[in-house]
Length: 290
Ligand code: GDP
Ligand code: MG
Image (cartoon, rainbow, N blue to C red; front, side, top):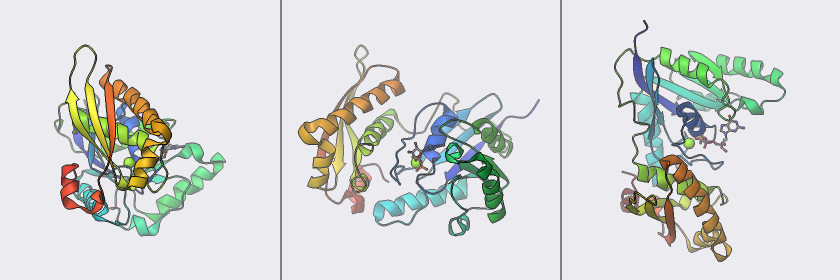
């Protein structure tokens, strides 16, 4: 019989290539929020995949990018640290893109490459030349075409990752899906729904905190959250005319939270202007960016 394997896999790649979507699909459960805005993932998040043969601990990192403020620097540090400490590096790229030499110089040799979004590659005859181009551009130990959206190629990718992990016992309890507490996931689900309803300038300036989390065995938890925005004008956008945008975000977030918890839930969401928190070490600490 094959020996059990367990280890860590760092997910790296440009913002927006689909790292968080891939993580959710691999786990079969949504723990990482996804949005079309770059830099949606802010903190290191573990996603733990278990089957009979292996445990793969994915480390979802904020994407590789040039930091513009203190929050950006912390995000970048987390990506670099994850690269240093993991057993396998999984570099994710958009299959429609040409290889990017500037980015690849930071990717270790032997990394596994997932070329994602192959569902968007048209015509399909373009895929093979792309695979060859990425293969020629860097010493990857494997290149796997995938679509996190349609779930194609995921099984093969998991096999490739498993085969590169050390033999050994599981690192985490197999019942654990992530290292983050439920309240963190709830706050993230709210942030995701707000991002889905706002344009470019707002996302950098928002953070969501849980102020109160009251369990109620019958009706499901009552959760009070605050959305912190950088400016009064952002508050207007997040709240929307007559509160419509916030209401819609709250309803959608509640559905996601209920799916995550498997119970009903009640959310109440306030929006508060917390100026310049992205550059303020104290505010960052309070919001969980240690
Ligand atoms: P991250 O910044 O690398 O974590 O990227 P996300 O997982 O947040 O995804 C960025 C955007 O790409 C989202 O709008 C996703 O829905 C979309 N996306 C991710 N994977 C795929 C895919 O395989 N196909 C398509 N068409 N879209 C995808
Ligand atoms: Mg992400």
